[in-house]
Image (cartoon, rainbow, N blue to C red):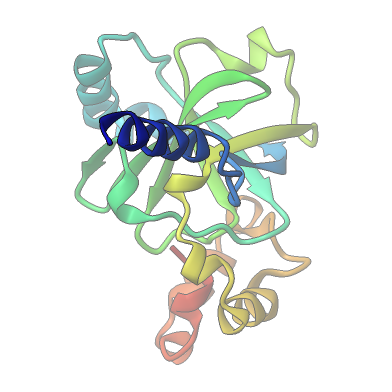
Length: 189
């Protein structure tokens, strides 16, 4: 009797190990490097110091700005660190560990990247270059990412205008106006 229970138990353990994972462990996005506004060095100082203490690392002052051609919504409860409306998630940029900053109201295709090394120098990056940003699947809000209404609204507000967040000082303001308040928030984090 005991041996048959042990066999059943062993079979259960083996079957648990061989169950295929249906979801990928990470999602890789093709993003373009772009020049930012030079504000991260001063505006994100507190967050950088807090993450450094939390992870016992030293981050470079400043950020690398990326633009994707598709919206990605984060699971806000999966962040590594949060300060006010800024949330930081772990990820990889061309296999280099990084922290991805996303804030409330950020366009869903914009990423602000912080790392322990100067990424433009160490990876020889320049504006317009395509890079791979890998984000763990657990950090993504699959419900919002798969919502057709969210995608459609993002297309209306941002498709073919993805880079305007950094290149125009008027379009981000235009996106925050009250007339788009009814649906425009769906195009943002």
